[in-house]
Amino acid sequence: MDIFEVLSAISKRKKAFMHSGVNENEALIKAELDVSKEFHISLFDIKKLVRA
View 1: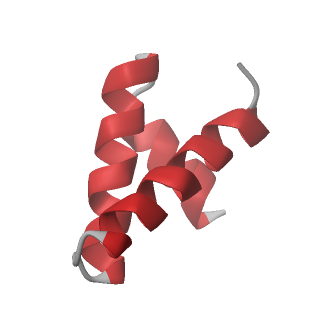
View 2: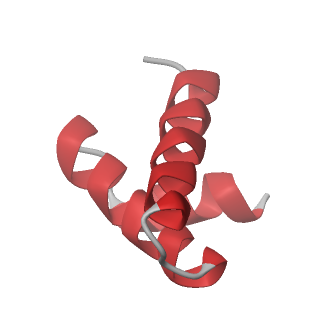
View 3: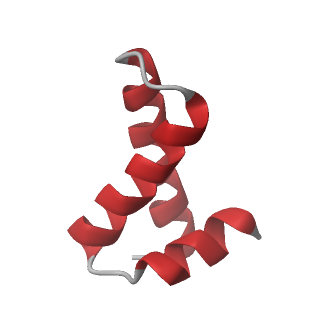
């Protein structure tokens, strides 16, 4: 799995959370956490990717 696949997964989940009524910031946090758990990547590394 490369960086672009991880970012794509985060983006898709963020959009799904937003469509269910969650605000954008909270949706991003939830998406990062979900992707971190599913792909076994540390949350710290996920946040570095997203914030870069």
